[in-house]
Image 1 (cartoon, helix red, strand yellow):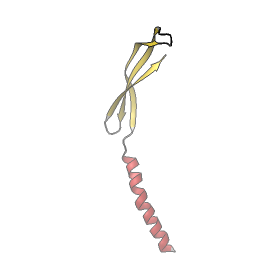
Image 2 (image 1 turned 180 degrees about the horizontal axis):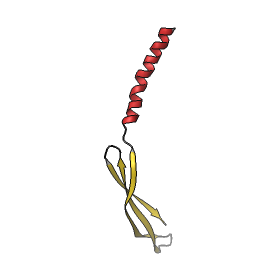
Image 3 (image 1 turned 90 degrees about the vertical axis):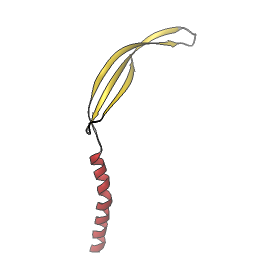
Image 4 (image 1 turned 180 degrees about the vertical axis):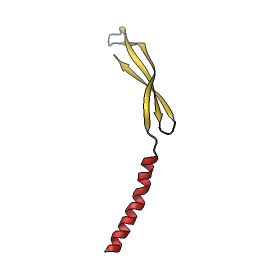
Length: 79
């Protein structure tokens, strides 16, 4: 019985260790900052064919990762 328990523990630690190591080595976001923010005018047509304008705010962000990599992305907000 003791041998079966030791084999089970050895198998569990063998298969669990690579997964834990993979999570440990995965880069993570250290911080995100705003690179640019601007307001744009856009046009839309209603169901009667009339055009009207509205403003959106376009914000560009940059995320910094723990391995030195950066990712830039843009989001639009209406309002």
